[in-house]
Length: 147
Image (tube, rainbow, N blue to C red):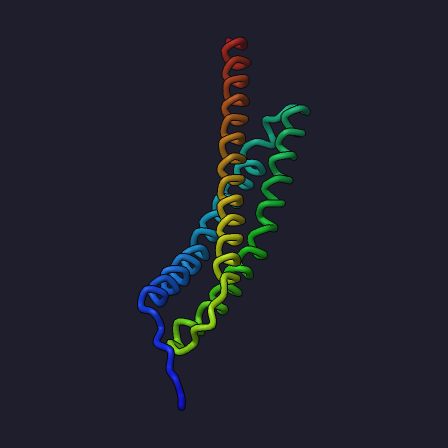
């Protein structure tokens, strides 16, 4: 005798939500990629000519941090794609009910990594803009002193 196990509709909705959230992370990561490119552009295009030695050192620190954060992006994208490939079959095959807690653990770990990336970029952005403000204030002071 063959027994069929019906997929719990609530579980199916949860899986769809996990899939949609994971899929949305790809665009979030692309946004962060553009943010990093924008910040690096500011560093290289607009700040270099106006900087003094100690400012150049600080600028290089920003550049290294942004480069490191940017290097994390392909790894995160691959992890997201792996998660989507893992969830996908459960959405297609409603009879596949062999879902473990590993899926939630994988999702949560990835979510934590992505949030950390976002928070790190936000922090670097805030510090970089403060750094730029300091340069602008010091340049205004020098300009006013010359008048």
